[in-house]
Length: 212
Ligand SMILES: O=C(CO)[C@H](O)[C@H](O)COP(=O)(O)O
Image (cartoon, rainbow, N blue to C red; front, top):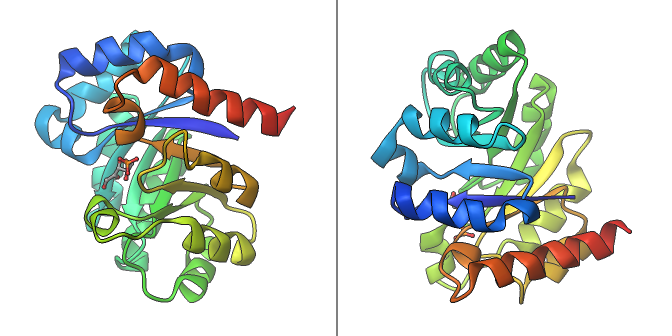
């Protein structure tokens, strides 16, 4: 089980300082969608250069032009790019083609997919590396959590890795671990904690105990 730090709404300076301070606890560094809107692919290049031993995920949430947009991320050094599960399967296939050409990986973000089991089957046929359960920030504000969708996706997965995001922090991580996610993603839980290093350490400790 891996821990993915999502960097969404920090400045570049804040993001580098925070990442430096918690590096030992994280496996994947996500360049979040708002962070990429602010800094573009230069953010991916900078983070890959500074942390070559870590995996970098570009959360592009691709909706169209799958090959072209995924290629932008891979050329900048991303190990993973994301595409939306609600888009056309041709777009997801384009992303997968780019991943195969560059030797990298795609995660399909299932935010707002109405019929998860049916869509998962079609997505798995494309052969993507991973599928993400995602309860978005706006959905979290309306009181939703990702745990039920995670359980549903784990029930229906064939071989894709499953990651989960949606307001996860040290107080809620245990249920996601117990359910059996392959990757847990924490953004605001770590980045907006009063003590991000302590928060990341607590999450990493729960994960380490599970994998003992
Ligand atoms: O993709 C995202 C928002 O669209 C976030 O990166 C993801 O939801 C993780 O952040 P948080 O833990 O704050 O929910």
